[in-house]
Image (cartoon, rainbow, N blue to C red):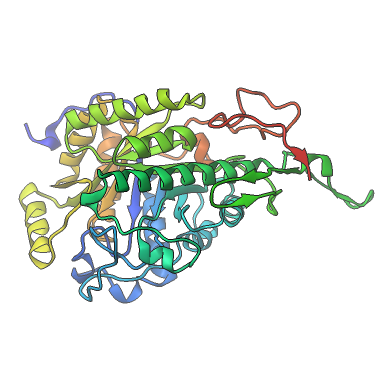
Length: 424
């Protein structure tokens, strides 16, 4: 029986996201017909991709970013290749100009924690949440590269390659960077809470614009930064924008368990998906997580075509130009074949998937026009947007500011201990 003949069967609805990066996730993508490499650094490129994803009713888009030029598989230094896309626009600013040009899709820029000031991160993402009316998220990322540290000149990061990650030096660096990331996210969350709901009075008759008792300092003294607060941006519409991160192992799973809402993983088959889900749940228990369980989405690089043979031929042609090496599984298949895989792996406990289109817009179009209708036919994906906010779409409550005197403990962000704070 072919995939197109597969009987429709009820399925638990999936979350579906796409990861957008340049011309696509395959290094040869920019050389493919239809990719328009001359427009990669234009607003038009990003608006068309975001609107296509929204037309497909997807939960969210993530926008890749980094503090150095793209480095391929190299952790310790950038690749100075001239046959691959180099350079990208600032992800948070891309998301900001997409906000008024879209209406329902979640906008999740990548912002690095290692060299970025938490106060700036909190302000930018809170602003994005206001601009998008509650559709903002944050993809947390660390920076392990010495050349990126050199851009800022505040600290030195030792050169560690992938082969060195399991050495004492590598493990110490990973522990430091992920420990710092947890502190940054915690601090950003506190800044989002530093304005209670209702802090803005805006009463022209009495001359009171804000209630000072509802603005709070955060007084964080961390290993690499200190922040007093309060934020300069009023509380985001979601209270706390969605925090997501990518996990390849236990340490990043622990980070997600401590401070995140959604975690992206990279299983390579159904059995690996079971192990990955178990690792995330183990990390949650180790972290003493009291927030709702993490939503777990699996990452897949996808090359799609009308037939399996055509999809394999597409991938072979791309690899002949510049072979793809990926942390995630690469699937060359049809939209119906991809739907089969997504539903088969769902039994492992996955909540959904973040798909990385190999070539943009070709594979994004195939996701929206092929995969989404197929999943909907099988009862595994929505036929329309129901929720306006991104947290709500993932079944997460709008949290209460931890500094509110009448805060409901069940709605306070419980990733970290609740504090009373002090008025600004």
